[in-house]
Length: 114
Length: 115
Image (tube, rainbow over all chains, first blue to last red; front, top):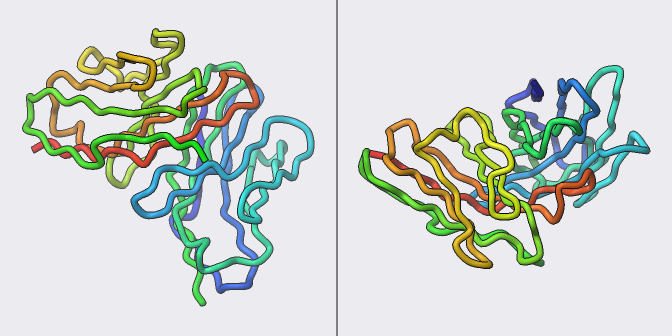
Protein backbone atom coordinates (compact mmCIF):
# COMPACT_ATOMS: atom_id res chain seq x y z
CA UNK A 1 0.00 0.00 0.00
CA UNK A 2 1.13 3.52 -0.68
CA UNK A 3 0.54 6.55 1.52
CA UNK A 4 1.45 10.22 1.80
CA UNK A 5 1.63 12.43 4.87
CA UNK A 6 1.59 16.19 4.93
CA UNK A 7 2.18 16.96 8.61
CA UNK A 8 1.16 20.61 8.50
CA UNK A 9 -2.41 21.67 7.85
CA UNK A 10 -1.27 25.24 7.32
CA UNK A 11 2.00 27.04 6.72
CA UNK A 12 2.29 30.78 7.26
CA UNK A 13 5.13 32.76 5.73
CA UNK A 14 5.84 36.40 5.04
CA UNK A 15 6.17 37.58 1.47
CA UNK A 16 9.77 37.44 0.31
CA UNK A 17 10.74 34.75 2.79
CA UNK A 18 11.57 31.18 1.79
CA UNK A 19 8.84 28.60 2.15
CA UNK A 20 8.81 24.85 2.73
CA UNK A 21 5.80 22.56 2.57
CA UNK A 22 6.57 19.12 3.93
CA UNK A 23 5.67 15.74 2.48
CA UNK A 24 6.67 12.20 3.40
CA UNK A 25 5.63 9.07 1.59
CA UNK A 26 5.52 5.31 1.82
CA UNK A 27 5.56 2.91 -1.13
CA UNK A 28 6.76 -0.63 -1.56
CA UNK A 29 8.47 0.01 -4.89
CA UNK A 30 10.11 3.04 -6.43
CA UNK A 31 8.14 6.25 -5.92
CA UNK A 32 6.95 8.68 -8.52
CA UNK A 33 6.23 11.89 -6.63
CA UNK A 34 4.12 14.89 -7.57
CA UNK A 35 3.07 18.26 -6.22
CA UNK A 36 -0.21 19.87 -7.17
CA UNK A 37 -1.66 23.24 -6.21
CA UNK A 38 -5.33 24.13 -5.89
CA UNK A 39 -6.61 27.67 -6.05
CA UNK A 40 -10.19 28.46 -4.98
CA UNK A 41 -12.80 27.05 -7.38
CA UNK A 42 -10.10 25.55 -9.57
CA UNK A 43 -8.90 22.04 -10.22
CA UNK A 44 -5.60 20.59 -9.12
CA UNK A 45 -2.78 22.13 -11.12
CA UNK A 46 0.41 20.17 -11.69
CA UNK A 47 3.52 21.86 -10.28
CA UNK A 48 6.36 19.36 -10.56
CA UNK A 49 7.34 15.72 -10.38
CA UNK A 50 10.16 13.42 -9.46
CA UNK A 51 10.58 10.28 -11.51
CA UNK A 52 14.29 9.54 -11.47
CA UNK A 53 17.63 11.31 -11.68
CA UNK A 54 18.54 14.56 -9.95
CA UNK A 55 17.05 14.75 -6.47
CA UNK A 56 16.26 18.45 -6.87
CA UNK A 57 13.46 19.04 -9.34
CA UNK A 58 12.28 22.41 -10.56
CA UNK A 59 8.73 23.19 -11.51
CA UNK A 60 6.27 25.91 -12.32
CA UNK A 61 6.13 29.36 -10.71
CA UNK A 62 9.63 29.09 -9.19
CA UNK A 63 8.82 26.07 -7.04
CA UNK A 64 11.24 23.21 -6.50
CA UNK A 65 11.25 20.03 -4.48
CA UNK A 66 13.92 17.80 -3.09
CA UNK A 67 13.62 14.04 -3.13
CA UNK A 68 15.28 12.40 -0.15
CA UNK A 69 15.17 8.63 -0.37
CA UNK A 70 16.60 7.92 3.09
CA UNK A 71 14.05 10.17 4.76
CA UNK A 72 11.27 9.23 2.31
CA UNK A 73 10.51 12.90 1.87
CA UNK A 74 9.67 15.22 -1.00
CA UNK A 75 9.41 18.71 0.48
CA UNK A 76 8.23 21.58 -1.69
CA UNK A 77 10.29 24.76 -1.54
CA UNK A 78 10.46 28.25 -2.94
CA UNK A 79 13.24 30.75 -2.18
CA UNK A 80 11.00 33.80 -2.04
CA UNK A 81 7.26 33.53 -1.42
CA UNK A 82 4.65 35.66 -3.15
CA UNK A 83 1.20 36.56 -1.83
CA UNK A 84 -0.18 34.94 -4.97
CA UNK A 85 1.34 31.60 -3.87
CA UNK A 86 -1.35 31.36 -1.19
CA UNK A 87 -3.28 28.20 -2.03
CA UNK A 88 -3.79 24.57 -1.06
CA UNK A 89 -0.87 22.28 -1.90
CA UNK A 90 -1.12 18.54 -2.35
CA UNK A 91 1.67 16.00 -2.46
CA UNK A 92 0.95 12.74 -4.29
CA UNK A 93 2.76 9.47 -4.86
CA UNK A 94 2.49 6.71 -7.37
CA UNK A 95 4.19 3.37 -6.89
CA UNK A 96 6.10 2.58 -10.08
CA UNK A 97 4.98 -1.04 -9.87
CA UNK A 98 1.44 -0.54 -8.69
CA UNK A 99 -0.53 1.00 -11.52
CA UNK A 100 -1.46 4.52 -12.34
CA UNK A 101 -3.44 5.66 -9.34
CA UNK A 102 -2.20 8.63 -7.37
CA UNK A 103 -2.37 8.64 -3.59
CA UNK A 104 -2.67 12.12 -2.15
CA UNK A 105 -1.72 13.70 1.12
CA UNK A 106 -4.28 15.67 3.05
CA UNK A 107 -3.11 19.00 1.70
CA UNK A 108 -1.35 21.98 3.26
CA UNK A 109 -2.78 25.46 3.11
CA UNK A 110 -0.07 28.00 2.41
CA UNK A 111 -0.75 31.53 3.57
CA UNK A 112 1.68 34.19 2.40
CA UNK A 113 1.22 37.52 4.16
CA UNK A 114 2.34 40.84 2.74
CA UNK B 1 -3.23 25.66 -22.90
CA UNK B 2 -5.45 22.55 -23.11
CA UNK B 3 -7.61 21.90 -20.06
CA UNK B 4 -9.82 19.21 -18.64
CA UNK B 5 -13.37 20.52 -18.31
CA UNK B 6 -16.19 19.22 -16.14
CA UNK B 7 -19.93 19.80 -16.06
CA UNK B 8 -21.89 20.68 -14.08
CA UNK B 9 -19.87 22.62 -11.55
CA UNK B 10 -22.45 21.85 -8.87
CA UNK B 11 -25.09 19.11 -8.83
CA UNK B 12 -27.76 18.75 -6.18
CA UNK B 13 -29.77 15.54 -6.09
CA UNK B 14 -32.08 13.57 -3.86
CA UNK B 15 -30.90 10.37 -2.21
CA UNK B 16 -31.62 7.38 -4.43
CA UNK B 17 -31.48 9.34 -7.66
CA UNK B 18 -29.06 8.65 -10.49
CA UNK B 19 -26.49 11.27 -11.43
CA UNK B 20 -24.10 11.54 -14.34
CA UNK B 21 -21.02 13.69 -14.04
CA UNK B 22 -19.40 14.72 -17.28
CA UNK B 23 -15.82 15.41 -18.24
CA UNK B 24 -14.02 16.37 -21.42
CA UNK B 25 -10.40 15.23 -21.12
CA UNK B 26 -7.52 16.82 -22.98
CA UNK B 27 -7.94 15.79 -26.61
CA UNK B 28 -4.83 13.70 -27.24
CA UNK B 29 -4.82 11.98 -23.86
CA UNK B 30 -5.36 8.26 -23.59
CA UNK B 31 -5.90 7.61 -19.86
CA UNK B 32 -8.81 8.94 -17.85
CA UNK B 33 -9.47 9.01 -14.14
CA UNK B 34 -12.02 9.92 -11.53
CA UNK B 35 -11.10 11.00 -8.03
CA UNK B 36 -13.26 12.37 -5.25
CA UNK B 37 -12.73 14.52 -2.20
CA UNK B 38 -15.21 14.42 0.64
CA UNK B 39 -15.22 17.73 2.48
CA UNK B 40 -12.27 17.93 4.83
CA UNK B 41 -10.78 14.66 3.66
CA UNK B 42 -8.10 13.53 1.24
CA UNK B 43 -8.44 13.30 -2.51
CA UNK B 44 -9.21 9.61 -3.19
CA UNK B 45 -8.76 7.60 -6.36
CA UNK B 46 -11.90 5.99 -7.77
CA UNK B 47 -11.12 4.55 -11.19
CA UNK B 48 -8.87 4.70 -14.22
CA UNK B 49 -9.96 3.98 -17.78
CA UNK B 50 -7.99 3.11 -20.88
CA UNK B 51 -8.89 1.72 -24.27
CA UNK B 52 -12.59 1.68 -23.39
CA UNK B 53 -12.24 -0.37 -20.27
CA UNK B 54 -11.51 0.05 -16.60
CA UNK B 55 -7.82 -0.50 -15.87
CA UNK B 56 -7.87 0.04 -12.09
CA UNK B 57 -10.48 0.76 -9.49
CA UNK B 58 -10.53 1.35 -5.77
CA UNK B 59 -12.70 -0.23 -3.11
CA UNK B 60 -14.88 2.88 -3.22
CA UNK B 61 -15.83 2.15 -6.83
CA UNK B 62 -18.55 -0.40 -6.16
CA UNK B 63 -21.48 -1.56 -8.30
CA UNK B 64 -23.23 1.77 -7.84
CA UNK B 65 -20.57 3.45 -9.94
CA UNK B 66 -19.88 3.11 -13.63
CA UNK B 67 -17.80 4.98 -16.20
CA UNK B 68 -18.21 5.38 -19.89
CA UNK B 69 -16.64 7.11 -22.84
CA UNK B 70 -19.75 7.49 -24.98
CA UNK B 71 -18.02 9.31 -27.80
CA UNK B 72 -14.59 10.56 -28.76
CA UNK B 73 -14.55 13.43 -26.32
CA UNK B 74 -16.65 12.82 -23.20
CA UNK B 75 -15.88 10.69 -20.17
CA UNK B 76 -18.69 10.18 -17.68
CA UNK B 77 -19.12 8.92 -14.14
CA UNK B 78 -22.54 7.55 -13.25
CA UNK B 79 -23.78 6.93 -9.75
CA UNK B 80 -26.90 4.77 -9.99
CA UNK B 81 -28.54 5.36 -6.64
CA UNK B 82 -26.93 8.16 -4.72
CA UNK B 83 -26.36 8.00 -0.97
CA UNK B 84 -25.77 10.85 1.44
CA UNK B 85 -22.14 9.76 1.76
CA UNK B 86 -21.60 10.27 -1.98
CA UNK B 87 -21.63 14.02 -1.35
CA UNK B 88 -18.15 15.15 -2.39
CA UNK B 89 -16.15 17.04 -4.99
CA UNK B 90 -15.52 14.77 -7.97
CA UNK B 91 -12.45 15.42 -10.07
CA UNK B 92 -11.81 14.09 -13.53
CA UNK B 93 -8.23 13.77 -14.78
CA UNK B 94 -6.46 12.65 -17.92
CA UNK B 95 -2.92 11.77 -18.88
CA UNK B 96 -1.15 11.34 -22.17
CA UNK B 97 0.34 7.99 -21.37
CA UNK B 98 0.56 5.45 -18.61
CA UNK B 99 4.31 5.63 -18.81
CA UNK B 100 6.53 6.78 -16.05
CA UNK B 101 6.82 10.32 -17.33
CA UNK B 102 3.15 11.13 -17.37
CA UNK B 103 1.41 13.52 -15.06
CA UNK B 104 -2.32 13.68 -14.62
CA UNK B 105 -4.14 16.87 -15.49
CA UNK B 106 -7.20 17.61 -13.40
CA UNK B 107 -10.46 19.37 -14.12
CA UNK B 108 -12.04 21.95 -11.79
CA UNK B 109 -14.35 19.40 -10.22
CA UNK B 110 -18.08 18.86 -9.80
CA UNK B 111 -19.48 19.39 -6.35
CA UNK B 112 -22.15 16.75 -5.74
CA UNK B 113 -24.60 17.36 -2.92
CA UNK B 114 -26.96 14.51 -2.02
CA UNK B 115 -29.95 15.51 0.10
